[in-house]
Image 1: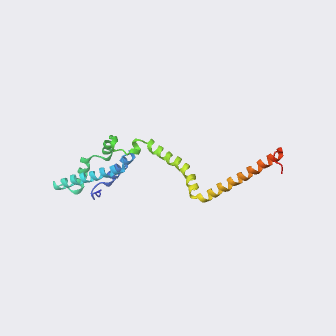
Image 2: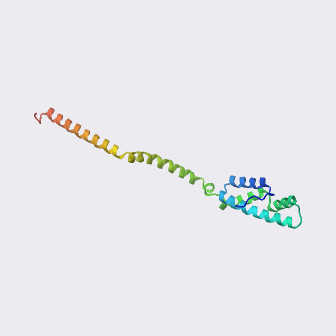
Image 3: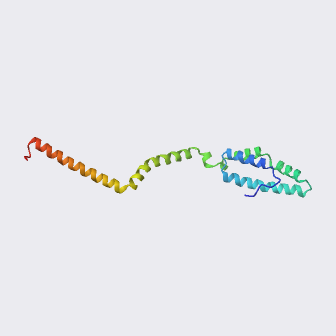
Length: 151
């Protein structure tokens, strides 16, 4: 992006930039438009200086021919194709945000389990063996109480 010309009224260009960004124009598009406007401004100012006007008058004439920042912003904001996708479809970022939250709520416990795999396997094996031994002892106790298995 070309620099703001030294004689350019930077407040006008800053106001235009602010207005376009508030209106939802994509930042890359704003930068490109401002670069184009700076180039046009320089051309108009050079043309006015070449015709014999002072720098101050040439600058004022160049800005007058470009138009005010409010008018330029209004013209740009009439075209929805200049707006960023997040501004045109505000539900998309909301859905993406919820998707990330739900995915992380589900994936964090899975990642914790995977990262502690050997510990969890050892716990599952020991719990399974404890249940098997306890079940066998209860079965043996039940058979002894019924009297089917004499000891």
